[in-house]
Amino acid sequence: RLKVKLKKTGFTQHLRKAKSYLDESIMTCLSIYHSDSDINASLMEMIHRCEILIEKGLLKTAKKLIAKAEKMAILHEKHEYVLQILSIKANSWFNVTEGTNKLISRDIRLAEENLDLLTNKNAYRTIYLQMASLLTRKGIIAHEKSLKKLVNSPFLKDRKKAKSFTALSYYYYIHYAYAHGLEKWDDRTYARQCEWISFLENARENIYFRAKEYIQSQSQLLIIMIKTNREEEMKSVVDKVTRFYYSLPSKYKTAATTLMFNNLLSNYMGALVVS
Image (cartoon, rainbow, N blue to C red; front, side):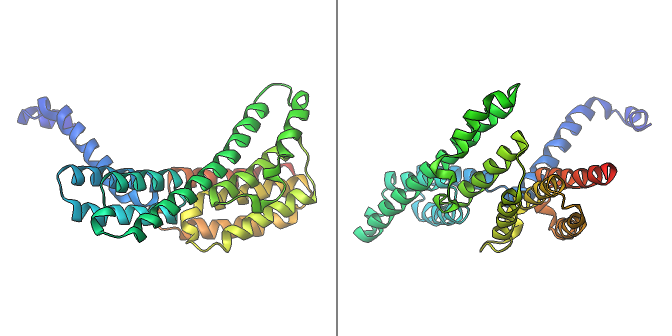
């Protein structure tokens, strides 16, 4: 009906362009609204803008923006971006023009720290990818020896080996994946998962920033409860996560967070059907 009405006005020939413009406008609005919840996207945009400012010779404005980006990258443990930002600062002579060696020394120390953190994170990421590769192959039991070798890595002996939040999340997920893949559920698996959830709930940063990881950890806890005969505890977990999810500000209800919440509900409903 709309097309018929528009045809009479001669607008139909522009309908495709109008639709394309509308789609683009909606995506732009969504990108702007959700940019704060997507730290990587925000940092990439800030770094890009800073490079443009430097190229145009607007160093004072660039300096303020790069300081803001650096603070955000450090807060969210984005070590790759911290190193990239420090490289931009060094190449742009931000510190030298200020005539002080103190800031130069500070940036060198910060670069060394973040390189160490990045190396640590990549060590856990490598173990995670190797385990994921083994778990997706046919005949998991045939690879049990290789899986045990991975889970016995020095990095997985003690959570204190993990030097950042990302590395720590890998630590807990690797242990969970090992138990899930080989169906090796025990009290230690349950205790470790509770330990991870407790860490998330008591972390310094706003838990909204970790909403996806928090809901995922609770969904995994439900699986462990089912496997270790703790079904009576499940409802309290689901109730707590449901309250948390519906209290989230809209910009933190990303597709990934919603998917994790739906997975948790599916796990719970599945357990009720089986019982």
